[in-house]
Image 1 (cartoon, rainbow, N blue to C red):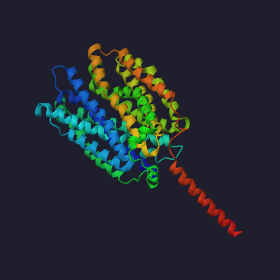
Image 2 (spheres, rainbow, N blue to C red):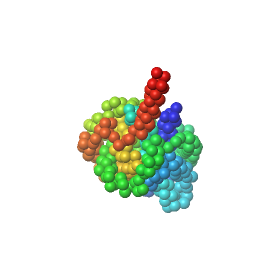
Image 3 (cartoon, helix red, strand yellow):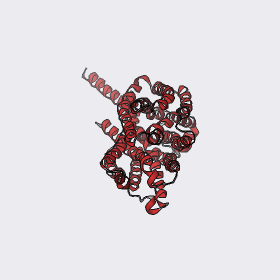
Image 4 (cartoon, helix red, strand yellow):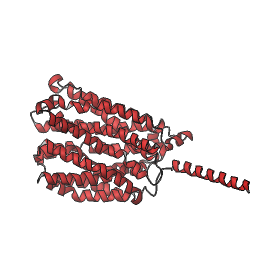
Length: 447
């Protein structure tokens, strides 16, 4: 029951954080380009809107340092409570913002500030949610435990896109642009209160408590991690770049790409995104479970190779008709990328010792996220200049995937060689030994 509560706490917060973060991504393509960044040139509006989208990604490394330090010094739980408040509060306020037509430049300025707060909060959330699960798991189930908070991405996005789809279907275009788009952001307040209530009832992770009790916490985690684990930080950045660019396209930019450059309706694009994310909800825990038997590295390499082979066919085939569009979204996002993502939390966290794990894991991952977050700006510029060329877009994806694949091949198999101290396992083993010694002593005295 204790493990279920921990997994629920890691998942609940993760869902809310990603719901809020991707809610902004969905609104960028559907609403913000018109209401907050109006321009006589639609391409300029899209470009500026996605610059603010990228700003949220750019802020994530800052959040990883702030909350990583707190998580490695004070505790995982305290850090995670603050990330929820930061993300939920900023999302709620976005739902109350006046538009450009009402207050002019103040509207996009406030939107960018709130987006930066979102990015900072998420920069600390992901690593903490992963560690809450993995540091509470015993050896043999860590891959499965580490995959559970990853479910926050598809569930959060499904909730976000479903809310937009539902409201869009119940309102006219004018009503949706006037007030309907605000409702999903305002609903964040309810979800955040629920997540804080769930997380308030959990304990600190066994590994952090052991380090704290033994006086082994790092005074300056960021200094120590760069001194002793610098190579692994750069390894994570490279490992994440390839699938990260494709992920940002498949989960965010696809709404603009499909509606603006291919000609699909908004409802078709949202449906394709929703069903592929729904598929991820099944794929992620299954792959996480199997990673405990065959290893994270093998799954990671297999996923990168598959994405590489499908990169150009994806861009060639999705404009043909909606059936191909739905099918390839499900395959690439719902199955292949989901398999890679299912392993990342555990794979990356196993590279670092517990006293700097929050900082090292979060910083490496979020630097990569900051880089790939500006992908939509690059793609918008390319599409404006050269059109939606499948070979140009597919070639860019292949370049990133090749880098990640090369690093994955030379990465350690963390299922076999890990920085986890198995603190929980040692305690259980000592308890079993003590019980056995008592039993032997009682038997001897009886004789």
